[in-house]
Image (cartoon, rainbow, N blue to C red; front, side, top):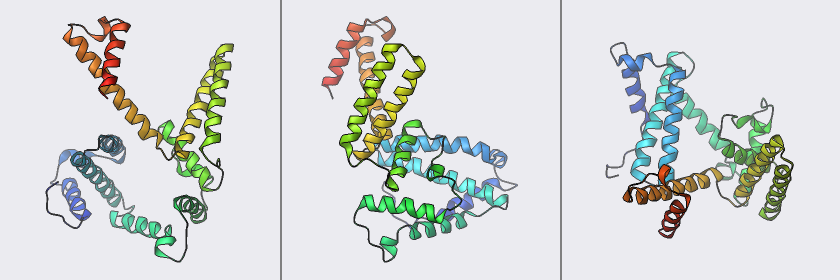
Amino acid sequence: MSEKPENPDLQKLVDLVARLRAPDGCPWDREQTLPDVRAYLLEEAHELAGAIDGGDWDELAEELGDMLFQAAFIGRLAEEAGAFRLSQVIDRVHRKMVERHPHVFGDETLADADAVRQAWERRKLQKEPKRESLFSGVPTSLPALLGAYRLTQKAAGVGFDWPDAAPVLDKAEEEIEELREALAKGEKDAVREEVGDLLFTVANLARKLEVDPEAALAGTNRKFRQRFAKIEEGLAAQGKTAAEATLEEMDALWEAAKGEG
């Protein structure tokens, strides 16, 4: 980006949304409700995640701006409802982050990132006594792989964790063997359960290896898309579609695509 650096000013967006929602503003924006905005928020969040995966800073800036606009819009809806103002939200999260970083803004000393994570989870439990569970802050609506990652992160934060990655890898091998047994017995429900156990364990293994499993899988999905696109290009050059090609033809093009990186 080439624009001159400025101090970030969310008030510009707050004022913009207020103008759009004004009686003489945009009819469409005035009709939007909180449930309406939820759909756009999810869409923008996925587009922002996609920009992160793509590694394009210009695209990331664009999508981050869209997310900030959605935040300003929600803040305006809340203000109109008499619930809160966006400035109050910013003050609240600023205060919370300062409180949760006493090793930066206070006298506490923490040795490393693991110690910080554990202290973070303990502090959250102390500050939020109304939480029924350590996992209350993990939305059930999260993608399942990301949910498994966050659940094991939180459990590890209070000391419920494997010592290192090696026993988690052993656990994954154990889950694979249990899956084989379920397959041999032809027990469909058991197969489903064992597949779930295996995926959960792999997510936990990724955490121990300091790998975000959701991002890792997104990268593999992107690689699969790119390589299959090469298959389609190769088939198109032969006047064929994937539906018309043999497995052997597609395999040959797949291996060629792998060789290209």
